[in-house]
Image (cartoon, rainbow, N blue to C red):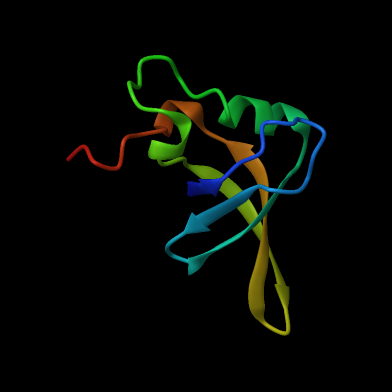
Length: 89
């Protein structure tokens, strides 16, 4: 998953959009299982030299659909140890 846009308000459920290429090339709304997951994702590991929006994230998601079309990603779990710079080979 990579961020399209994110709102840094831990209590807000609006303004967060991401892309998961294997599911859709379009950005979709993101909601979180809990605020701890959101806060952790918006503060990636310090050893990575890029900003949060330039990184790729490994997450467990539940995809909410409407009439079979993906509409919302619900992030259930984030794996910070697998966060990476997609530009690296």
